[in-house]
Image (tube, rainbow, N blue to C red):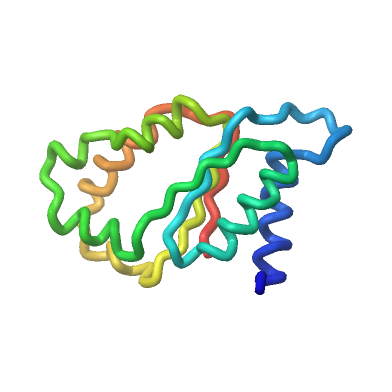
Length: 136
């Protein structure tokens, strides 16, 4: 059973990025859509709407608590490393949709902000045509 709120929210997001036929906005050639598994209802609805608009969606999920584990164990070289999937998303896709759906939004509160900034510097090196970040 689908969540009506997730479907309506997904339709708004996708309508902004993939207008229905007849509108003049350029249709992106590929999309990266992801979030944690907690965002599955919204990501699934976005996936379906992108397919209806003849888009080419690619999904990538993170585990709940994955960032917390990463910062607890990552060394400097790992903070600077750009994961292949992130690099591909920035280089290959016209649209990036990231659903932020943390189980504990304060989980990174004790992580040094300099370490967080160092990681962000590496993974956000190239602008996309369209980027949407949604907090759920």
